[in-house]
Length: 253
Image (cartoon, rainbow, N blue to C red; front, side, top):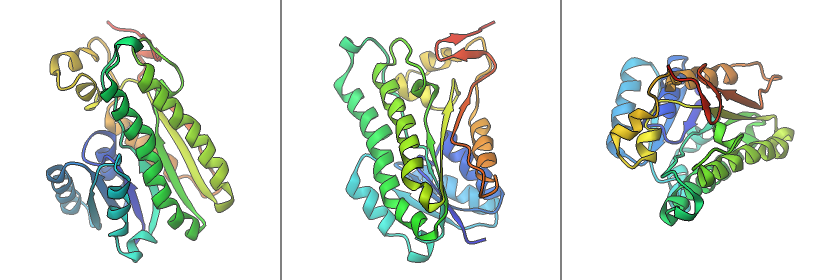
């Protein structure tokens, strides 16, 4: 099998879990992230466990020149073998009323969740179009379906991902390219640790009293969607822990 899946934010959480499940099923991996040490660690794990090829690219999705330079560095054979793009890189930073928001937090979320997704997609789509097939997964959120207290700018960025997923589907349908928006609810990854800027106690408390989703739940769902026949596209999926009824309604024991 010479096909590749390109994963942003592949060094932890959903991205790392996706890398493992696709590798387990014979896919070659293009693993990207900002942390060289983590890229090397995950890459070695994949190569040692599965008989596949792994390409690693270290760049920040917020930096257009870095994105283009990194993707251009891939061989033409690898670029032409990309069949799936998983736009996983994203984050929430801070939580609170709009008038107390930190501008730097807003810019990090907008630059990563929206602009970074656009930069990578623009660079990869030409290869999918040439092949007249492909699949793009955009990692959205329940925050892209509903707005919750204190989530203002993060929710806005994920609403943008939801809209972009629909727009991409329209723009790319003539090339037989599938686009799927994945919208998870509460998931215990590094998400809350990043949101609360390294405050482990606060991050852990988010998941007290109920069983949240884990990265494997999302990775298994993405692989299921990716493995549907060519004539089947699942455009949009909301995935919640059983204890979560909506963005702001959680049943805790």
